[in-house]
Length: 296
Image (cartoon, rainbow, N blue to C red; front, side, top):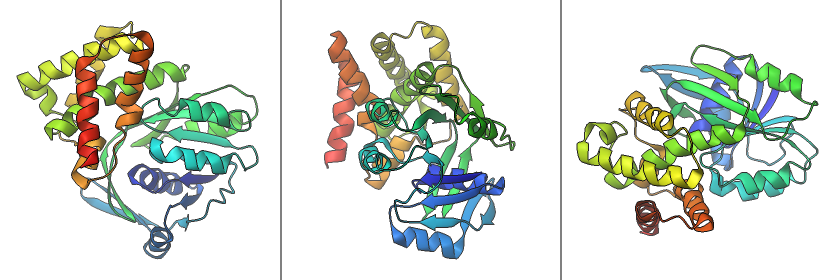
């Protein structure tokens, strides 16, 4: 299958490697020609369990997006520019892999022309340089139709048939439930680890940090109308345990002095809380703290 992957950060590099390995014809669309040229010259390297693998892959710094099936891996704050370009293209099937729920308004404008699939990635990935990524955490990619259309089912079936051990896709019925579950994990873990500058596991290993995690969780479930609260809490705690040695993406952004996805994650919760007139003091504190660190 011919697939265009838009975005060559950690997630874009990871998906480009595995989908190429699985005999798909991949074009990786980068933001900079320098990165595209490095990938064309050196290939794409994936490191897993301290073992390196390298493959050849096509990289392109244009916005041609010639393929009928696209995977968008850029962070949510880059989506406006990508969406403006996609509106000029003929109808395509597009899988969006972003954290949070702040991108839903953008997807609604694209769904008039394109067939939209929403996904969440459970993988851990760390970009080492322009052409190297570490696969630091194994998971699935969960996907759901944003709106169901008969056309394109074959492409989706091809995607969900992929099961390469450490890299597989799974279809779920409700994109909303899928995103809420992912948002709960990101909102509870990422801002706290970024502010405290700790790995994920510290949130359950340190009694005081765990109290903060529980308080934050209890605020957020009120805003998002989570009815299976205990089940959701156990899921969040399980992720902390499963990824105990990992640093969250927001913590990594803070370390690198990069812009975080706080607006897509807690920003969405803050906006929803204002609409519902729900008091969320800890969430607001964390949101402003991360925004303040960004401003430095």
